[in-house]
Image (cartoon, one colour):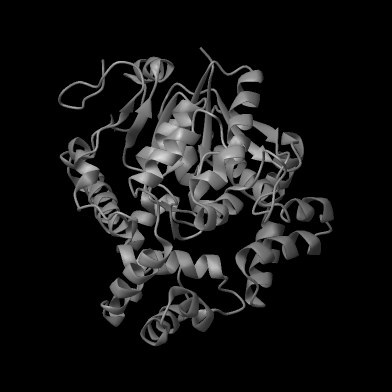
Length: 409
């Protein structure tokens, strides 16, 4: 058994994701586990489809096991997103590879750039660039340029390479035994507005689905997934963006000023700017426009907005993941779970209710996840009640889960 872990959002799962899994298997992986964001994603938005639907699509198209990346890491800047996801991959206890997409496809180049970013000279140059008002991403590029590392700086122009650098840094910081492997991104660029005949970026597919429904996805997603997406659309289980906008703004307007004071990754009075923008804006897009500064990009402000809306506390964002929650598995995934028995360094379960029952920080993570899902359920075309995160079973593609939803070992 040789296990690779992929960190993903699958928002939605498409042909490019299937290609990544296929290439990962060609690199020697017999089993593929995925650490996947839940109902809110890294750019500070609710997911296009509910997490169990996205997990099942991944299993239908090549993944073996899907684990949930907890909210404080899923809706976070690249550094914390990577640290949380790598910590989960490492904690599984039976993984060998960390496979990621990359524009350059060269792990040695990425490792060299990651090593540069850990030097005292880089940190000093980064502080100086941040002091001049640059966003964090722009400040990193500027710091590398100032050190004469133009080639490394060029990598940060590519979103997948930027994230790959954070994965490699997180592996090094943890002294993880996982070996990083890069699959070169092909066919459609990240966030490209259009794609090829059969490949398009996830952001392009979300736009297509918003105007053309599930049929607009057909040529860009695996054949096994398309009927599944059609069914989800028919049942109203996809995001209603107008409803989501109203739900989020309604919650934000109800919050007192102090709710904006200790948000993860906030500083320099942006909390006051965000609070006043919430009171003045008639939409979340207008809110972002009113609150934007040179340093605070729209993506960063969206994450702050979601953190305030969902009540993500700073202390949980600063902690490590508290558990491994299984969203779904097939037969090979069950083999992985059996291999993880006795090796996993975090509690492992498909049941959020069981994880909450462990108490302490684990319960706080579980309660936050359930609360965020309750709000997300109001954003769907067919709204659902709260509490479903405690009752929705994991997706078992072969056989059935035990009556008490415990793992089969």
